[in-house]
Length: 188
Image (spheres, rainbow, N blue to C red):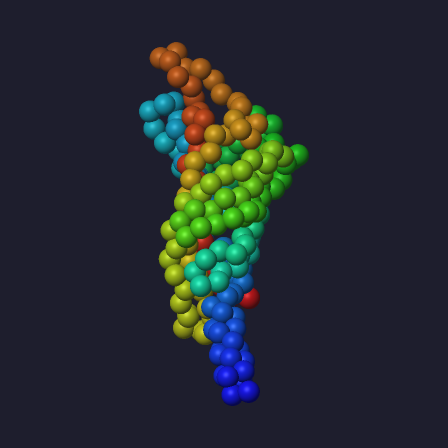
């Protein structure tokens, strides 16, 4: 009887510790960034970001249990209005028809996250590197966590095929897109 009571108390303590270490977070867009880089004319790199995005994720003891995100494709911002309008057009994202870019995690290890990325109505499996920043309490008593996801995709895999050949050889827009998603979340 005494052993069973101790076992119950210990299991209760262990369960309470795991609950304390598990949390669902909402992405804080004011402290996050969804960015990308792509080669231009084969000699330089254009950087951009998306200004409107949201997401939720579940962490337990520093490990991802789930993550999902939504980006509004028409919020693309490279700092050049004419280029951004072209990227919103049917040549690229066709934001009038495909307004959302989504990501849904399917699995994660300590250093890698696998998930389904949907761009331009096409869903592909991608693997991203995880750089975990940690969990802290802010000055207002909120739990916050931060991390960076990074990886590369081929834009043509998602139907973003527009390009022009350049006279010296090569093309205007590179196929490889480097993604860097810097996230800070607030516990729900």
